[in-house]
Image (cartoon, rainbow, N blue to C red; front, side):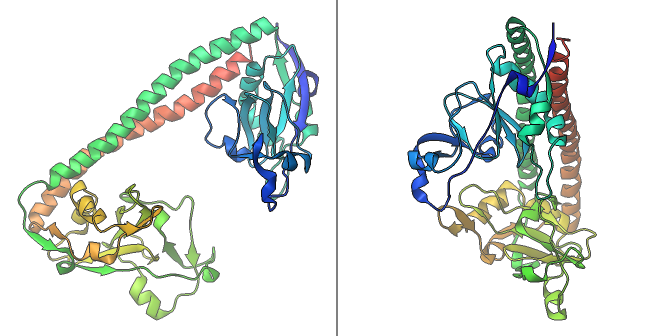
Length: 397
């Protein structure tokens, strides 16, 4: 039998705090301390520590509290809704409203129930800069609590179903990784063979980007500044960084305005990780400007099809050549413009280029279709996870 309680009736709500961050001796001790950032991307149920510990001095200097093992940790801002269980005594910053459950409440049962209430908790947040869930509002949130024995039984059922779901998700993610390998195999096979070779500078003009001034950026700007993060394999991505500039003089415009058929390639990333050198061709975009550390190749269309070279420059054969020019320190890798001018590349007759493009696009279209199916299934898995939790706390599993 389920009985409804408010959060304030089933546990004590504990807030945290942060010692002065400019006092280095407040950190580096033995006292585990969490911030919401420590739970970003964290998938385990229990957590024992965050990125930084406090010293006794740091702990004593602020109003944070050591809370016992079994406490359910709930982030209450930036963002609202991360949940974990303290594996041991721990303290937090002010971004948590943690719940120390009473004896009749199972921590794991409460953990899953708070996960099921994520949208409700987020909707209770208030604030302008970022939303925050207050202890007062959290205290009024209602939860259902059956007997301890039934709580444990429900947790067991949830975890059994989640385990099966996790196995399916893992298989889908493995299939998606295999598709990446297959895409590279398609490109490698397409460009294997004996073809005429020539340097890129003989068939294309290499263009370097410009360091546009951030003070001239404006959401009302006419031109889009294409940065490293915007260039992905075969597509542009402005989901995280969409920058426009409002003032561009004619001299800058004539040198850095991109045109249809330009192939962009990123020139900076993590050394040794090959997380750059991504290539995308400009299609119908008429207002894109080339930013620094992104290069472009403008091809002689009488001998080189840009689409062919978008694929070729993304192939394992060319990427091996490209990264042979990598320099930089341990963290950052850079490739200079020589990588776009010195290496020889294949350049078959236009008719052969067209045939290779058709073969590649047929095979990659199959990959796209399969990947779309996988992505849909992964989205459905997320929905199913919430459905399992909803049913669990309605007594239907």
